[in-house]
Length: 349
Image (cartoon, rainbow, N blue to C red; front, side, top):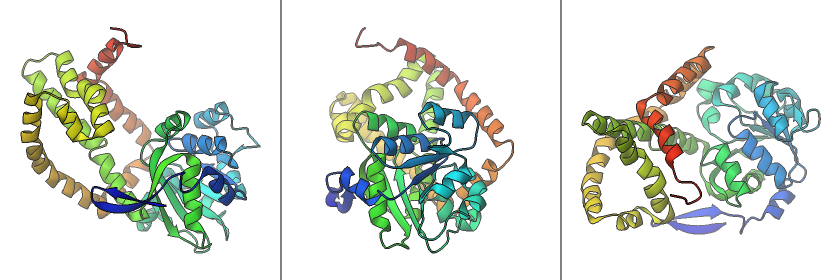
């Protein structure tokens, strides 16, 4: 483990320099890792672990997702099983189903959580709000978490590129006395860039806040608002989209991702710098009360209950698809399809 300075605050982080892949393999050498669910996080984590030399099996119900697992090289009856069979065979049972899916299968999974096994999560939702989810693990097992800070697709893509996706990790229950070492080994196994310590509660609240805030909900709302104002004032779809989304994602985000917001500012015009410096505090002051309201809604469990109630409806998927289709059909995102086609390829203009 290494101590790092995060903006003046010292935190302990773990990388594969302090905790090697070889050590991770040694820690988990006697474990059978059963990845339950092959949807969002399942493929990335399962395939990365397999490629890194760990003993991995997948549990998935038959259907399109099962067929995807077969296409990815998981062999029925050897490394691909029903959820029940995988849970029975696994010593580390990885709950990588959706939050709603985890609630649904919990009575089944719990039967296979015999003494000495490990229950693994990549999100603290089910445990943090177990008064609502009913997920209460037995006391004689380890309960651990590694939470990639991105999608399973990104985890896999970055792994294949030789990079790692940052992850948080936590131990909720340490029955073996070795839960933390096991957790870090798992994080190294899935290809973490670096690991930072948290708790199930902190991960769940920060994750739900981020998804509803700057990562998805707030950014979509901000983009829609600016695009609409430009269009209402006579700007064309192409101009409105380029000034709202394309320049942000293709030009500016890589700059502040690489060296920070100040460096991005320094590489923009003085007019842009002045305006951004003047208006950033106004946006912050306007948005912060909404973020405080959002965090309160998350922390009190209100957001969790909304998710549980909506995701458990039998027609949830149909309703979700309609909402996503409505977003896709917005003029801004239809304009995006044309702009993407016009992006120069292979450096050609």
